[in-house]
Length: 213
Ligand code: SAH
Image (cartoon, rainbow, N blue to C red; front, side):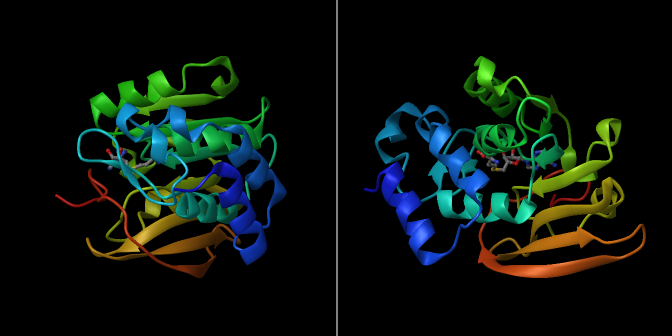
């Protein structure tokens, strides 16, 4: 079993996570508040943990790699697809600060309630949870500085690219049901994007219009 400090030391010494804002957010947010009671003792093990409805809270290293890739800054407006426990949204909320805004979408009602409960304290007042199919993004608050998808996608929904600002970044796992590559897609103009592959991971499947049946 690892501790929070051990994880931070490992990320720093291996060079996996260099962004100070990202490391600070990890140090500030209590992951134990976002896992089920029976897993609180394992909150800082570098593993994914089951939440409810067959979903998972991603492994800390995966969360950190994705968070760093998003390059979020103070005051940014970020969209997340897949609120789950609300942990990823909480980290992003710390990073963008009181002038920023996190919109996180969740398709399963019980998880909307779970995330709301976990995010109820005042320090996460800049995080808003919306019960909807996020596979088409969330046009209502677009355009975004960054969009992060935390469920496995069969392909990149074009709606997500169009809801990004020019210069914005989409972080998204794309592949089949068993293995996905996390892609970092930067919108460099209204018509062009560049893509970097951050490696293979495994996520729970995206549902909804652009997801799997
Ligand atoms: N980011 C979460 C982990 C998410 S697991 C955390 O920090 O805990 C992926 C989540 O995506 C699940 O809760 C699942 O219900 C949700 N999901 C799947 N398809 C979705 C869709 N089309 N729109 C919104 N949420 C979706």
